[in-house]
Image 1 (cartoon, rainbow, N blue to C red):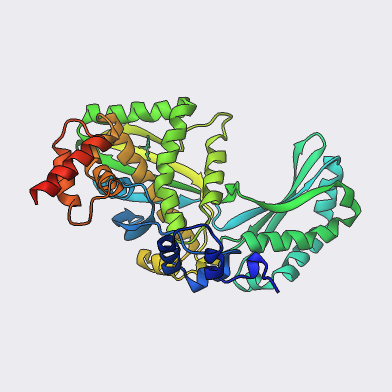
Image 2 (cartoon, protein in one colour):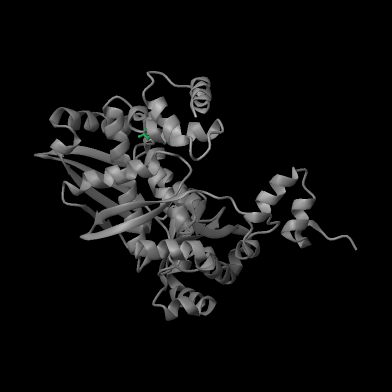
Length: 406
Ligand code: MEV
């Protein structure tokens, strides 16, 4: 009998693909028996470099933070930003209401007052149902904390369930509870649009503040330029998008390294960036006396247990490197990395652009791209740094020169 695709082994799937033997072998060498169990139609792993942000000071503690990212200069920039933020006394994180996720049951063609009264008068039942649906989260001190109706439009209402998921990111916990709660709304069955968690995790807003001694960024004038650049990000959507992308270079690299869902964090962050009716930068910088002071504010919904995080050894190892004890601590570290990343980018841009500072990293990537081997890369990079202008053809020429010299 012919196997269905999802029934095949990873190697059988590889064999069915139109690929060179050496490419199949490469993918075979990067297979992981745990990852094979995580997703359907598995063939291999994608390898993303992991590097360390060494010694970021947050709430009086020093962290080594693993970052998973392919972009060459990001980890170097994060390290630099973290170093700058030490000059102002380290970073501080405050959390709104930790670990509470929001789940929605959505209704159409319904009168707000009617469903509001229904929710208010059925609180006991709503709480009991949540507990029966997910007793394990109650054992850990979590569970449904409150539930209320929220008017979305004239005829649309969302019943919002605030659920404490403790150290789990909690998507499965929330969805399990919501789906159990649906039964209570049987009489409104034809009005129900759907039930699902919200990634707009406004109950988990993290506020990160950090300061830099003004001489460390090159003096008052340089600090002023950073402030002006930051103001641009508050007013211009084009700039805000790029600035937030840079902040997410740091945030998403840690979210990914720890096995968390970076799409959820990014979606929540971008929605939060639009909360005042226009899309703005998530960070802002101002001068206060001798300090350049920055703030980053966004919802960060992550976990340290559950789902893929517990299944993937790499996530567990990365959490161990980071020496993280709770989801709240991880959330704070992720925010701190975002602020450091943003600071490094703004400082570089305000001082003539990012290319100059990160040339060695960019040239290493270029050297790899044009086929330089491990032994040739350092010398080729040194040659390229000495050039006023570099592109792929110049890099290739320099590589040929180098090969002829040796
Ligand atoms: C590049 O990946 C990120 C930056 O563009 C961020 C920014 O412009 O603020 C440097």
